[in-house]
Amino acid sequence: MNQAVEALAPASLEERVARFYDLDEELLRDPWPLYAEMREKRPVMRVGSAVVVSRYEDIKTVFRDTVNFSNRRYTGSRVTHKRAGLSPGEVKLYDYLIELDVNHIGQNDPPDHSRLRRFVNQAFSGGAVRRMRERVVRMAHGLLDEVDAGGEEPFDLAALSWRLPFAVVCSMLQIPDAEVSTFRGWALEIRRGLGTNYDNLHEAYDATRNLEAYVLELIQRRRAQAGIGGNDDLVSNLLATDIDGTHLTDRELVTMFAVMLTSGNANDMISNAVIALERWPDQRALLLERPELIRNAVEEFLRYCPSAHGVHRVAVADGEIAGFPVRAGETVRLVVASANHDPDKFAEPERLDITRADARQHLDFGYGIHTCLGQWLARMDIEVALTVLYERYPHLRIAAPFEYRREYQFRGPQRLLVSRR
Picture 1 (tube, rainbow, N blue to C red):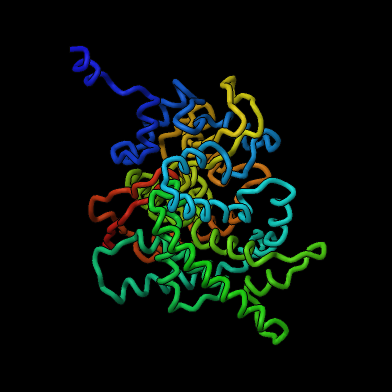
Picture 2 (spheres, one colour; picture 1 turned 30 degrees about the vertical axis):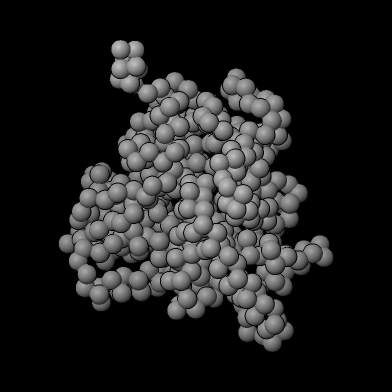
């Protein structure tokens, strides 16, 4: 009798959050009610090997505190817990992937973070990105020209949502068009690994080794061409950059380009924004009527329907977050998507409002010294894509039910069939 009663008892909040991070399909389908309950009842909680933080101000406080919370996310209890469940052979693969993060700008603390960031700041500055705008507009039209020429109706917007930001980065690296599709296959596996703590360990490892080999060959070709002239691409420029008598190592360059090709909030945001506008037809009508609102609309999409749902830190010493004790070495999972829906920060957070005055205060790109280096490029990709999309297809509509990918870190539809009419 007691066992039957226990079986019927509702799962606790901790149990449901744990199921969410174990990739429970029902909870992944709509995480927003779970986030709201976490903010209200347990804004800081220990779930498995990590401490999970869900309120805006608490998350911002951790972002600010670079002394007590390290950005070296390749350490910490989350990684230790994962390793404990792997076979010796799998541990070798996992450690190889995790150790790549040692050279990741976004997973380092000063002074290493500062040194790496200085090498690429100029390439990703707001001014440099603005100078790329016309090229990105042409690329967006070119992709839609392909869609029109193919005549497929409806067509998969999720694939297009990936293709434009990915193609932009490939163009910065001067990767030939014929090789972009191969790169994309590797990037999808690596990104899924990052979004699930390598639930696809073997596939992510193979993809990473393939991408590494390609990038190393690319670096060697550019280095051999140095001094010949005519190369003005990101790879050649980074190879030539000398800061305080130092250059980026091949390992650092490989990691940097791998991150560029596999991350970036724009990858899902185009599809996510179209879904949001379909659910809020008044906002869709307003954007079509007043296209000058697009820049603020992009900020609201990043707040309301972000792609990146969480980032990690590691506690350097015993301490606390909002009174909750945190132990040295524990992984701290910051649910930035929940922060973006915190009613203590944003009025009516569950409502899409492309005129929202404080939309830009979202935490989708982080905060402080670790604010995402590619934020200006991501914003431009999303803005250009949505502008071109609705200019060409003002009656664009979602044509079929869709499912989100089975990931907790990055949120976007597996496929999104849309009709032009």
